[in-house]
Amino acid sequence: MSYYDVDSILTDAQKLPCTFELEVPGLGILEGNPGEDIKAGTRMDLPLWLGEMLSIGARLGTSRLVTLDMPDALSERVMNALKADPRTVDLRALAPHFYSLSERILEIFEEEEMVDVLSDTFKKRAAEIADHAHNPRGAVGDGVDFLRGLDETERQLFRSAHDRAKEMRIWSGEAKRK
Amino acid sequence: MAFPHPRGIIPSEIAFLAEMEMVTVVPRQRLEGLELLGGPIEPLVPPRRASLPLWLALLLKRQRRANIIPPAWLHPDPLGLILEVESQHQDYKNAFSPPPPLPGQPSVQDRAALEPIARPQYTPDGDRYYPSPPFLAQNTAQASTSARDMPALPFHWVEVGNMLLDAASDDLVDPDQTRRLLKDLREVRMAKMRSGVDVLDAAATGGGGVALTGVGAMEVGEERGFVAGVVNGLRKIGASKEQARREAMAEQRANGGYDGTQDDEEEDYMEF
Image (tube, rainbow over all chains, first blue to last red; front, side, top):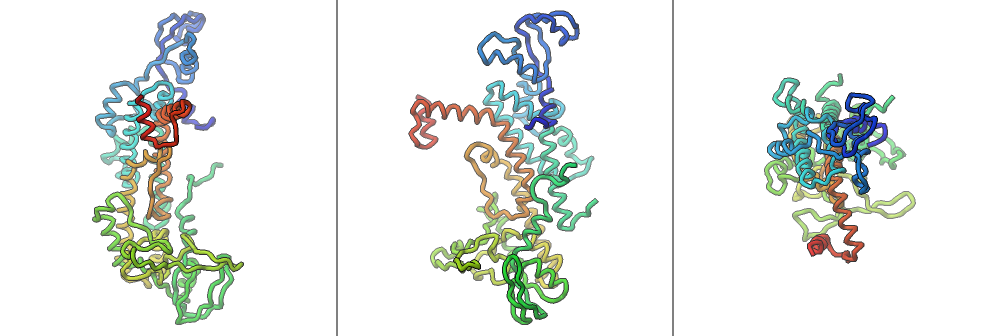
């Protein structure tokens, strides 16, 4: 996670449901009506970086501005689906940076079970990714739905595994360099 | 512009490193001894065998000035045996076949008869030393110590096998069969490597590790990106849990509960 890492920046921009605890004068611009106030109890999707900053009072013990909720991508429903079969879930549709997001969320919330579920998911899917990377079945094969549902981290994994296998084949003379 | 290659070491670079391996040749022409950076080369006198670095041997082979004697493992019989061990043997369902024994290390069969195969070598200054891989002759014809020994794949088996098949296939016994066996072996071992993802979370938590005994250089190079990516991903997901674990441990230590005993005992302590 470096400062210039585009994926890290994009993760920061993912939306997180927040509830305002206090009334904030003049912040109505977030809701789409500039000049107005934000009432206490308003629910709103804020980017991760903003929500994290505003909720920081929660950790210091002072009155906080917003409370954070679990994003839809990490809801109970999704966790159950992942528990049932990690391979059929379309992570990309849930969040393009699913793992980076969950990593950030897990820093904020203490969710032991979620760590286990996600680790298991990552492992199972990684094995599947390796299979696809080494035995390409073309763009119309049976794996296409799975590959379309990979999140950014998994795509990089697929890429590195696939490129390495290809380089290997080129070196050993089984394939021609294009 | 960004560096065009992915991180890590690419196949041609690994093959370059493998060219330092010593192989046995039968020269067809005389050649005076050469002073190479890697050490002096003995003079080549036609009917006598000599050990040369792979790159020089391949060069002489291409010029038809020498024949290469393939290493003992590069033969359909031992390769077939290794393949059988890799794919059928119960003990090696999830492990790779063992690497060649180190000098002085008794082979699996004759633990009783300790006969160290290590021969000391001398530096130019006269100091004695025992070579270890990759400076060990694992690909010379003499490298097979005895027939009872289980054949084993050396560290650079993919590279040496491939290069010899390319350049010196007429010196090998049954090159087509050898090529096929090498390919099968690679497939079997790669599949193991990939199915080994399950044990990788041991590497992601603190103090864990995964044994890669017997894995060749090219295989490491090929799987490096993927395995490192998986371990990194698991580490990031488990970071909060790991953090909590460390905090708990630090707290115990601060409370004086840590007395240098093992971790399980620490956990027992936590329940009080």
